[in-house]
Length: 107
Image (cartoon, rainbow, N blue to C red; front, side):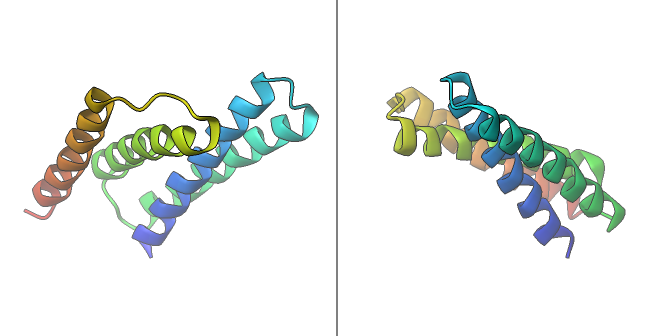
């Protein structure tokens, strides 16, 4: 279940961040509520993952890295923001880093 909670944290945080983009463009009060709900849910899910026994370094590292990668990709699709080759390489390095974190935690 800890992985389900961590995935919930990643998706909630990404949703909150994307909502922040909408709120910053004059989207109104509803988007600000979505920002708050996304971040509250993200921390709640992260707390549940930690409570389930996932190490803090692993949980936070994966949460932050996956959130950055998912936000960059999604903002490209939704808002037509740039996603250059260098940025794509960075996302690839994030994925490799997350794999190393998980492999290192298994020992």
